[in-house]
Length: 195
Image: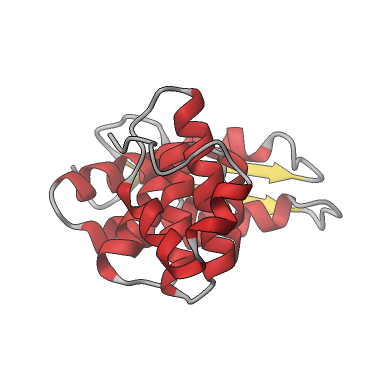
């Protein structure tokens, strides 16, 4: 492939917040055997159009979908910290994606990285036992024991309702807070099996 630009696409936008991301994804997902450029002009939009365009510009005009796929590959090849950075950059696009948010949390735990508050909020909204389990670990590492306990309890309840394994980590929190306070608020007791 030559380094010379063969095709230039020009896109005008004004208050196209609802459509601009789909348009930009269409540009970046083109499969060609030649180099092309995309010139996007925002005509003083009063909505989020300019913000979305700038985000794509910062990502090198790579679509969040392509970056998500790249992060999956990097993570599978044990380039987890590179995957972590990519996933953080696209997290707002994938705030309800359990893979993206769960992987950010898992990598943060493994490599002791800080997790932005919005990622924690996304994780809590996703509300799956494994993701909440990761949030509990992060809270506990930040000495937010009560929050860790509450999230771990929620994780346990979800796991129990879906017949998922109960994570042993949860029970280590009991020793930090005192198991009596937990037993008073749940149907888990000394006879509860940990699978």
